[in-house]
Length: 437
Image (cartoon, rainbow, N blue to C red; front, side, top):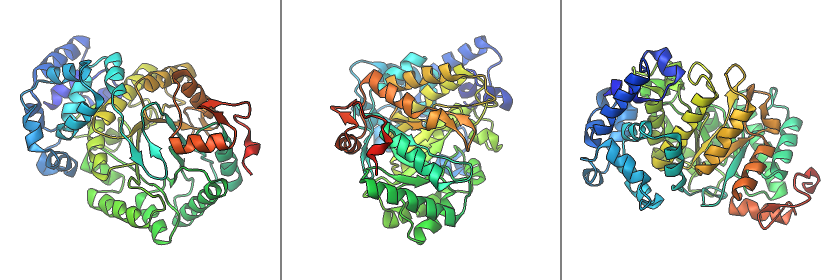
């Protein structure tokens, strides 16, 4: 089963590095034919990491409602694909079935779908969450404002936040990747951002992407934290490489629910990415797309406000070029939404990958068509701390304009109160930082 799943996967440099990929297109096609005929029951009975060895597997299996699964157990993967793409199947029906789908089932279905299939199916699904704002509503697209700086310089971070907000980015979250992963810097940056949001009466969320244990200590010290962040991996061994396990994350979720500053009820934020388990030698011989979907069934345990795949960030060892990055981004957004998550994507690439700005923008348009819930927002699309390329504030505004998407309702009303938007469209003052005192 593990071999069929791996060889049916679209070509990825990470699978080739792991030695699990199909040898050629003919073998890949043969694996897809075999996979199409497998039943959902057979996939459930054969997870890529055994139940006895892995708590991520146990988490997925133990959450399956048997009565619901029994209704589709005899379906083949091909049957599931056809049902998802059927014009009569709504996003609500897909979400109703979602709890019965193991990660291997979702991954198998994605492997049988073309890029256009993935866009069509993902577009139907809307997952709504609430922290300080209401996220994921139909017709809305949000952005995480990412004001990173290589020395955590407060003035530079404030300038990036101000610029991003007036271009309409930041309604998903203002999330900083800190250069210094300490309790003190975490508290200082969270406090600084919260003071800005309070002064400007801006209805969004703050977040600091330090390790979960650092954030937990910051919460104990009463730091104003709306969302608690952590990266996830698709196996227990991979999660341990990140310094986490389910018990710790349960404690973190309970702590931010008690001590966090968001009104909630959704207060968690997770990032994932194809190749993370392979990078820590924790892949158990499974392909990276299947392992990625295991992240999503793990994430839904904590009912997060946000989830995103950092699709091209891990590097060309895992996704070699623009077409591989694009395929992975579409797989991830479809799979995350089918798993019931508020799913976004960091549409990005590292500077040593075979990718360029045009390919990044192509993927942004594809994912916007697929109803991706949010992108990142960086000054000029260039992260000067993490040294990679992503979507800029200007890109985000263009995507909203192309598709007619709007920010979260609370954030839209705030932008209108500043004279930056009118009836959802930018005014002449759009992008003017002087509107913020």
